Length: 360
Ligand code: SAH
Image (cartoon, rainbow, N blue to C red; front, side):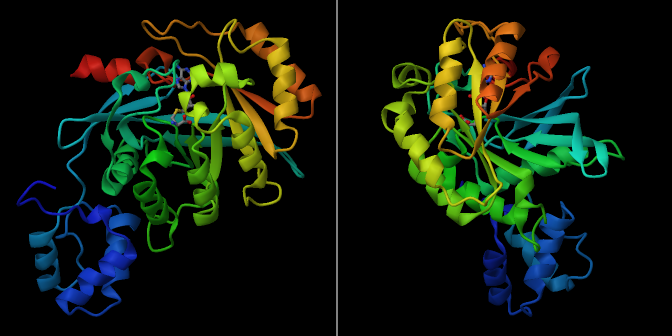
């Protein structure tokens, strides 16, 4: 933190707020009240917190700021996707994407149409994981986001929603490797999912990781959010190249850990698999994937590769993706195909870098 700068109160858990309250001699219930204003209602000024005593509000105003000064510019896609280019106080830029979708859910009472609005969130500015097909990787890691910066994405996104819209799902699939910024991620997730915080069900939050095994084990015991693992290959030889973290945690280690994770019965880990033409999309790959995932409670999400300048890959054909999916299904694996969204505003997976470069 720069000298003379006030701490961002959105970095504070309930425990931290309790310490602030204790220091001022206020009654302890004020901490929950304050958390309600900051996280529940998303207040952006202390003046608005009218049920707090005036001297306490003054104290807070003199010692803290609300939010880190992040500002968003918004691009809208014809398909309803909205991309927020979020400028941080130090000039770094990250992106969050609002993705409306509809899905048909089979219930005992018949099919139901669900309107979902997913917020795709970033955890770092840039990324150190160096996956070969990802445009963010080309930036390298600039820095970790603070707790307040992670959360600011939710408050900024809410402002861009129509009156009848609200966010239903949250996925850490934007810039960065969430488990490489673990203490801050966990604190942000705790604030998001606590009753005193944002009150979001952990089942509606997915953390996607490239496969940092010890951190996967930690998050699974720390907080019951959903996990997604970016797999992308069925041999160590190929995965070493596509996702170099594989050299540290090779496939057998990763999948063994997945099979042992303490997740609830009926829960499934999502395995993301980017379809790269002629690289990982063969019938043999599909068969190997079935075998690899047999001991794991998992499902597969097949993703069309989004090409970017100089990526060196092209996406598999729709036919190849569907054939691949059919083999997984025959092998008793649930497999879905993720359609690309927001292509006209470069908001699709892996496209977050180009825009950032263009904006700076
Ligand atoms: N670091 C985390 C989360 C960010 S990436 C992770 O690796 O899971 C979110 C997803 O987008 C990952 O599955 C990633 O492999 C995928 N992705 C990255 N670049 C892509 C591209 N160009 N096209 C399609 N998907 C891509």
